[in-house]
Length: 159
Image 1 (cartoon, one colour):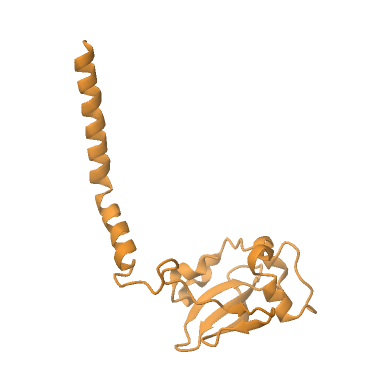
Image 2: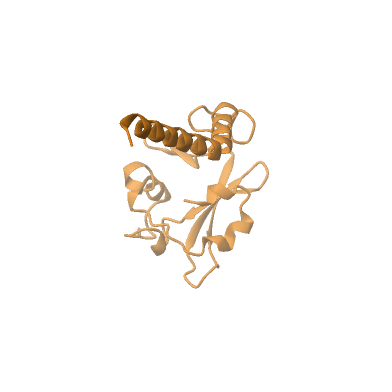
């Protein structure tokens, strides 16, 4: 076989492979572009970079004070999906009483590699969840699907 014919076959296979790939991912690419332009829900997102992510549970001002979000409340709870009875913080929207997110309670021994004492002030405990301090949080529940029926925003559960 001569080099021209071999090169022609290589080029043909490459073009065919790219064509098959493009055809297979056409719908995915279309949805991705629509999501970037119009938002994944078909409407413009609230923020260009953060999309429609949840409002923060609290913020920290320049003096180090913890400022809770007035649109949300946090209720401590427990998960009864298995025998571990993990401690939880349930974020609830004050406007419509929907559960927004379920995350580990910093006071519960199963939520941290080194759990904090119960005498720790709430401000200090919550500040320990932020930034680089939050790297030691353990959220490894294998039964997390036991409480999905309570959550309005499915994607908000994966902490």
